[in-house]
Length: 437
Ligand code: GAP
Image 1 (cartoon, rainbow, N blue to C red):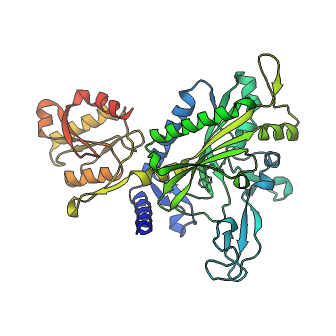
Image 2: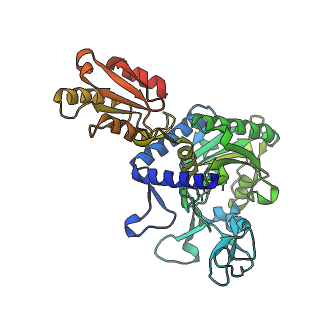
Image 3: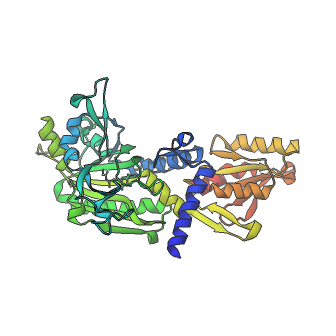
């Protein structure tokens, strides 16, 4: 029963996301491209709000962080040095009968094909790097890879940051950007795709401080999840066993979220030691060591908190999706944190055919527009407009009615309680600001 309810929840989220302009299936008019998704006008607002909040919390509110936006395409030697060309692979098993391919480590029975019961071949290492060729000639020399993590862009800019800013240890680099992986089994909507976005931090420390720093970052990740409204009841911190850890990590804690399809990785925290700086120093011949105030030279170690943007969106949608009421009072609403909601407020004239109401409502719209992303709706009846905004998570709806024309007050309705109060137009900006920021 629970599994069925969860499957329904997933279907409801995918359907709402499409219907209301959050996330559309990719390449749809050409029959689609499996497991690709396009963010619509509301999806991009939600995504940008998450990214801006992340940047504010992890970069702007601190004195030890430096932002970066490095290239997706990089010199292939970087992927040799980082170990990705050799190690970044999943075990792939192919059915000898129907040729279906599976992640061998995720199969319950590693000998039998789950779709046709044919015999599976021995698992082979399948490299997840997506290839492309730069320039007109497709040969070994022009073979390049789309980055599978944003992290390497930060390691290879380590020296640039030291030279430009002379930061004292500990300090971190942060960037948000696309990553690409040729996943064997993409799926579950935006959970596992071949093109996705990451928000990553490489935090450089003295090796002796790694355990303390690791714990501090765990605490910050918890705080971040609180800020975006993910309940701690839905989250597990799981230490990853040595044989499952990425090739660069000495300790990893996965932050698993209770998605409708089961507990799966949302974020990760890894102790990458000096693996990356050491290998890039050796392979590039450029000394990437750090010199402290006493003239001591050494390679800093790294703690890496990593966050998937798309998985954050899926977790937020799953957590926010709510239904209440019965019959024609049944409503769907997204209980999004006001910080994340695409529209902060919607404005309605009570009746669309009364010019003084329209005019007054437009003046309220113009007053608020420079401060917040504001929706306007004058279609249908007011109840339908409320429900329509509830479904996209707009936390406040303002109605301009006949009393507004007399005393310059509007009703403001709260999405979650559906309670209304009257408020002076001159107090609106402060009121909404106090609720949102
Ligand atoms: N730099 C470290 C790194 O890339 P990872 O655990 O492989 O670590 C980091 O990926 C995060 O990126 C994951 O926790 C997840 O949120 C997200 N992610 C990874 N693969 C993904 C995929 N195929 N689709 C969507 N998000 C993905």
